[in-house]
Image (cartoon, rainbow, N blue to C red; front, side, top):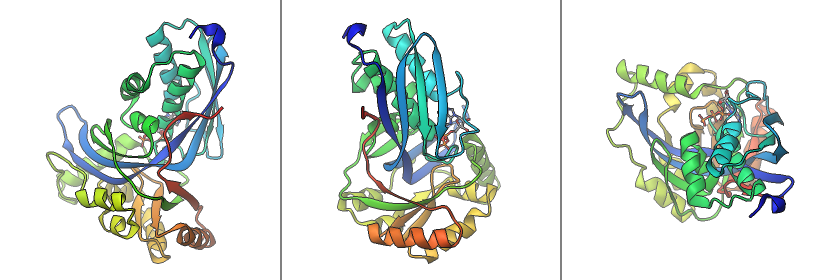
Length: 308
Ligand code: ATP
């Protein structure tokens, strides 16, 4: 499509994610870890508006504390926009207006969602029509969680987490999220896990991590009780060790009707699995009364898509 027909302003919405299962292999010589992840996209979204500009600029606001988010070329969404421009030889720029609802550095892939949204928005704004395989390839260059934010739904990720295949999931899963004031740095959580493993405080990682088939079966059957039994996150021990007060919130949630509680990704957001929407509402009320910020969300929801 020629630029004459390109849209004047594009609005894209992209979801945050939870890791329903996250197994982390031992550290590799290059410092990375192989992982096996079961991702689920949940109804907590990032909104990104893109409009033509001579340069690449960004404004960041939202319902969460955005003070830690860079508003320049370090922002993953700006890097995504530049990547699309480079790929198609677009000579102009873009202004991105980002409204964040996913907690920053919260282990829910908010920055990755922004990047996926920017890819989709620039593709539409510039009439590039790159197609999902090419967008996926660009996403993988930006970060391990970006391809999943494009894809959404429920998926298995192996390798660095970016080799994705969709997973069957029946029905809806209700979650209550408890965000934390201060974020955790993902590299620091991995480094701490390595330390805990080398001092034998936690078991060593597997050579070839894989998603527990019982998790996939529970997702396929829409069985929240079975899912609760096999939910797992290898980064949890490291996140709890770095932020010990998370333990108390986990215990409160688990004692208040949650089927299970887990640290989301590298934390510190906590995710509580509820039996259904009604139980999730009750849990949200109980956690709020105990002084915790609590958000009721559900999954799976679609990945980054144009909404206007
Ligand atoms: P991960 O995807 O590693 O689990 P996370 O969800 O814990 O990450 P993010 O909110 O994605 O955390 O951001 C982690 C860091 O990335 C931030 O502290 C910030 O410095 C940087 N960053 C770059 N671009 C963005 C963005 N668009 N939104 C938020 N953070 C960004």
